[in-house]
Image 1 (cartoon, rainbow over the protein chains, first blue to last red):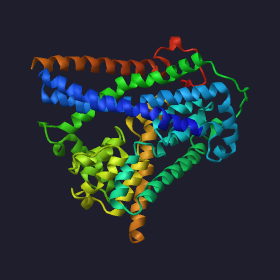
Image 2: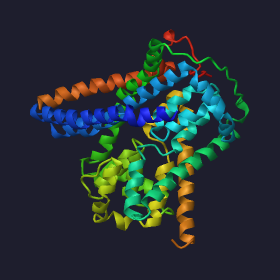
Image 3: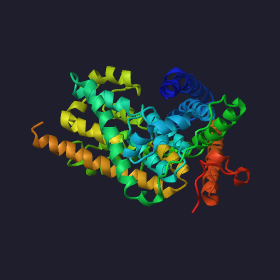
Image 4: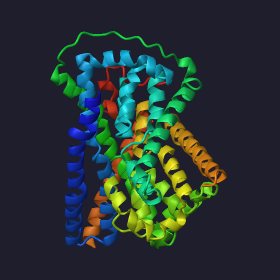
Length: 388
Length: 51
């Protein structure tokens, strides 16, 4: 299982994803910009295509290698008979968390990316276990949240940055366990969690079957990227470039307006600014965009979504006014909220796809937002009471 | 200017087909993960029971 995690997110999947990311966001984006400009296409249309569609759809497409590698590994392991045994061994431990043994691998994948993790829950036979796993996985710290944690930790807790980021991982795990227990004993209590398992003999899987199964499970993700994500990217571009009067600066855009409205929810959390609200709102599109939005709004023009680069730009950000908008305590509360709140649209779309219901997608969006709001409030107000 | 109209028209067409695909999936209760056509689905442990 550790090897699957490493193969997916380190050895094979991530390098391919990085290569695809470079291909799309560097080479193809530059090519598209040059080609459109040379063709005489209006600037706003170039911005729509490059900053909206290519950036949005491209960000999703970069996850495709991870998905296919993950599904290939899962299908291969399933074919060998290994999955059945690991599920049996882990069953007693997972049962304490409200799940069964088969839920181990999808949850582990949640530390890399929530989307393949949610899709990996297909391996679970019980509907109850599958739904609980799908609903608690987004609490975990996926790779897209890491830049947020790295940026804020480096800026506000320079001496304890690693410990603060580690604390965020722990908070995510604790909340996932608590939510699994809560969901398992309430909404999914009566739907049964019997763990019956036939242990097949070890065997070499048929590669044709493995490849077909991988394609069958993964191709829907490509279709989604070209449909729902495409439309959502156009929408966000419009919100960040227009207001009721027409084209405008981002400070006057619908996004800024929505950010102002959203910031009203955080009056008692210490980060009730429209920039924070807009960043959190844009984070629903993709968590990486929280850092990019903060970078744009606070004037650091070259903020990268990569965690390491985010740390490197922290010093620049300090001089741009962000430090005056957050205290260390409110920054920590912001990190907690970012860790726990509503999953990104891709994850939400995947939850809808996997649960087969809009109801569970909306439930996931709302209950995670409420939990994040409450925990973040407790952190901020508790910190104030303790004198931080 | 003409290039803008052409690219805009292509985008509108792509947007239309994307929205039509989403609408039809919702209307017919189909999922992309099984190819979008229930006639090809023989059922498996991963399928979600429709209520």
